[in-house]
Length: 291
Length: 235
Image (cartoon, rainbow over all chains, first blue to last red; front, side):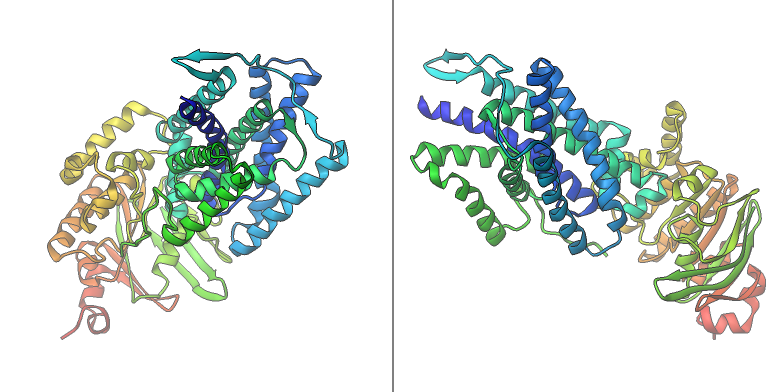
């Protein structure tokens, strides 16, 4: 029974990774850039949620929506200011910019509010209930269900709406998309907005779940979500979801076996293994070109 | 309808089009023939807004469109079927057609036009739910043309529609090109298969290393010894 409990914990942690990984994978899918500043968007989301709940007394859901909205705007600004002018530059230039931007955001936040951590307010009363002998926390269930709703919503946007179709078209062939009359800049902005909003939601969940946030909190979850995106197959949306969940479960299992100090290492061992044995990820196909 | 004047286009440092001028009248099929690398595709990409010209003007109806973003040019009524079809292979045939109508808002008319495309290309109807990456080259060419028609263009730019296709399929594609033209769409056709292109066109331009070298009616070019030798496998 304890295993089922651990599995549920792992899945809800994994859903946080999955939400962050989606932003990595969507941005990579459309402009072939690993947006290393994405972990900082997640951190900003956590802080917006914190100030909304602790400072202005908002409830969990209004704070969540606010964090998502602020992060969406933040993501669009990042693309507009830092990445758009590098669209035709070499990929390494854009990558270095992303890393620089990541550091810049971390230290600007520290400059304005200091590096001290903050205790996340109790926005959700956490009850534990007993289901067939399994102890389940209501927080885990809530985080998991909201994440699932967000992922379903994302699938709906990508497959059923006009902007979603434009995103798929641009990520497949930018020039062909232009010839359809698709505005590529608007579509890329929308991709950053959606990916960043999901990271913002993940930030609030993380705060609620781990109860401690600080300006450098984006680094490790950001890297792990990147691993999750690569694990699922970078650029593939369902891959990011599955990769995140697998990673969360693996980490929880590693801790449950008593190796909790090895938890972080597990993620990066997975990255090394996947790069060695299946570099295109679980869902990735080996790229082949039809001439 | 379309008037290109003294167009200069650069690909990085390469001077790809050097003072190209040409015009297309409403209702015509005009073809642009020339060897690989002569600048034919560059011209079409400039017309559809994928490339920006350095100098020169492009007059379409009563607007200058040189350097305008591609979506405005599509909106103005120019559709471009690119070289190598460039269908969205991760999407179904029908989704590709819907993307062709991206700028249109009349969803009922769009559905009707999808049906019309299926009447023109019955093969696409059979495969409407199939991923377009699984289609044969000829079917992909049909899809690329159908997708372009979905934007309701007044002027259709076709880049190498016969490339890589079996002779019978080439014949089918050219019959459809004539059909589309009879339906009132003006066509600018880029081809290496000069023989086929001249057989359907009203007028033709020959382009060599970025310059227009010969122009005239299709019949004149078909009769010219020089063209026969260079492009029609003369005898």
